[in-house]
Image (cartoon, rainbow, N blue to C red; front, side, top):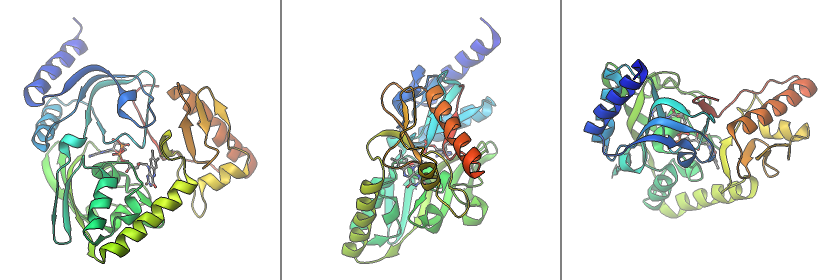
Length: 306
Ligand SMILES: Cc1cc2nc3c(=O)[nH]c(=O)nc-3n(C[C@H](O)[C@H](O)[C@H](O)COP(=O)(O)OP(=O)(O)OC[C@H]3O[C@@H](n4cnc5c(N)ncnc54)[C@H](O)[C@@H]3O)c2cc1C
């Protein structure tokens, strides 16, 4: 057996000691909304925040590269999959406590469900988030936002697991920017989040939330296999508007197509590969570069081997 296989087997054994759901060669297409992606050598799905903390501690101790997945709604995973271990922070790590206007949510809690629940309780601040199909942890890491609002407005603090131990990160250290935070690019894992909401009339909060959902339903390809907006908006403009302006709507490669409803969405029409998506994205970028001199950057995170 070669060294890396031995190391992986050892890692798997240690992870099984602390987490109940550890899978080998798991197709990642099952775990992301794009429904694209090859197998991960190891996939750990913690069933509680305790299992999450323990699994991450093992991975840090073993100095093992770490890929974290929330609800998989903003990622494209390569066709060759992910070498090493992926930790998917999902429903098992999804407990939520609400005390007054303060919400403590474990990272795997679903953002849309939390937005609905807090709206019903007359807590304002998450109305914009009801149609964002991420986990709370993923939404904080991405500083997800819509209609002029973003997670940074309601964020109070996060418990973050780091190779040096757990730390509490406040709003300043989080370094919020447009779809970015200081967590991105670091081996840090958001385990739970505290949000500060505002009291308001339940009827008003719910009607704002429903208004945003209606608008979203009319302008975005809801329910299709995608990773949300594929490109970041260039300063002062919208990637979707620009892609439409250069005739990008409907362009296709294999099973991947630029949505006819919203040009910044690439949708998997069935059987799309990551290679299809990247080839299509390259065509779109080339069009914008040639015709408008604008370079589009990816919003979607690329994970694994392509
Ligand atoms: C139909 C649709 C609509 C969308 N609409 C919007 C929108 O309006 N606004 C918007 O901003 N986004 C939107 N998105 C994108 C996406 O839903 C958000 O970015 C969401 O917050 C990502 O959360 P997630 O849990 O799915 O993260 P993932 O996609 O699983 O992960 C995203 C990144 O965060 C990292 N990550 C995830 N969880 C953690 C954690 N706990 N600790 C450390 N790192 C972590 C991952 O490693 C990855 O780099 C949309 C997506 C879809 C499919």
